[in-house]
Image (cartoon, helix red, strand yellow):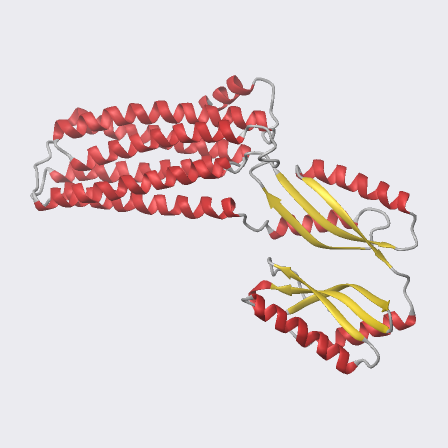
Length: 399
């Protein structure tokens, strides 16, 4: 209820969570609350840790300090990523959000490495941890604050599809586990001389490093440019095929420049006999309607298909039979018979799955091998093949 109240207070009547201005407001809300809650927990835990001589509690407090700093980085990231496109960055600044999440990840790893050393020293030179009921109770309550903060960030991250906020949520849930272990170590430490505080400090530090590693892994992929989901690909293909006169679609490319900043291109096939104005109107409407539906800038390229003939039909059938046995080839499209000077050329695009070939040399060898096979089997024709790489490798072989 408190979370909804904060969202209502921040957004007023605006509920378009993919709108850049709305995402920025949500990011500010999450960042400010992260700073406030983590600074409060930092002060409490470091104070208690020093009072009871617990390296585990101090490490947990410094971890919260790093979380507070990461919230500041998140704020800056949302501020910069929300800047409009300019001459130097024509696709906007959306990926800055991923860079800020990456900075957070390295900060988390640094904190973990530093406290491993301190925890090992505590194991080698143990110091008795003083058990105090009030301190124990305060640390227990602090766990509830972190649980709420984790759920809060997850809720907001899901609403605006923010990798940064989702990473912050995961980090907060890790903190819940860390603080729980620390609290239990304080409780059981009063019954043994074993340096449990130092051991827990090492475990906490290792967990911090592992959490940082996961944050790096989750943010590097979209920063480099990860493949879109197969669900999105199939949905776009299905929708574009619903438009009148479009007889085929292929070579869909989707590029993300940050949440809400997506560009896509796709080739669609039309009968070559259609007039240009009609084709333009269909493409223009498809770009506009699908762009609004998927919140992306869509550019459609037209591939005119020549009229079908008996020769073209028979040649295409023979070519499919020749290359069908090669499991690396998923499908062919844009099949044409061209006349160039004294040569007759069979030209087509072949879709190849990327998990079957590893280097450019192999792609070149495959193309030459396929062209030679066609030319040897069909007299009087040269063959020219364009290889299209399907990085998803999800579509069935439809040769």
